[in-house]
Image (cartoon, rainbow, N blue to C red; front, side):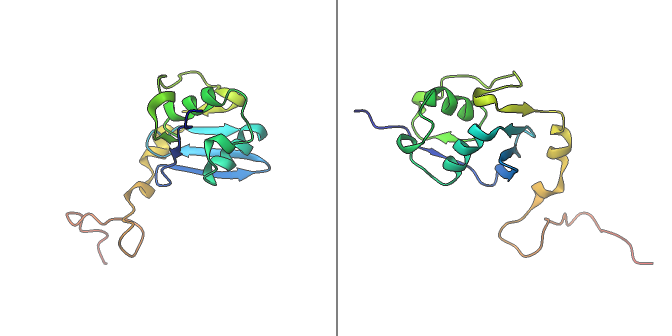
Length: 135
């Protein structure tokens, strides 16, 4: 039996939240966001919990689903065997996952991208910007 490829999820680039049994996943690098219906949400919850690929409950079309998620850069597979496909331009992926790009410009322009995770405070200050003037 061959060893299943494993994966990682970059928590700084891919964020998600579950609302009423459906996951919304945002890729901060591309500005795309995804709506996961319940079956896909169950799989996403397992992936974010670090469940091994061989232990995922949804085994049907597993290779196709993982390859699609990897092509969309939502997961990184440590074994490139499943990453032979290109990102999908269609709006619907496996398990009914819907991809949206209509807010990409706004998501990419969000100042949250300027977080300095090592410092106190929220955003990185540009020293060449004098900031607001006191009156």
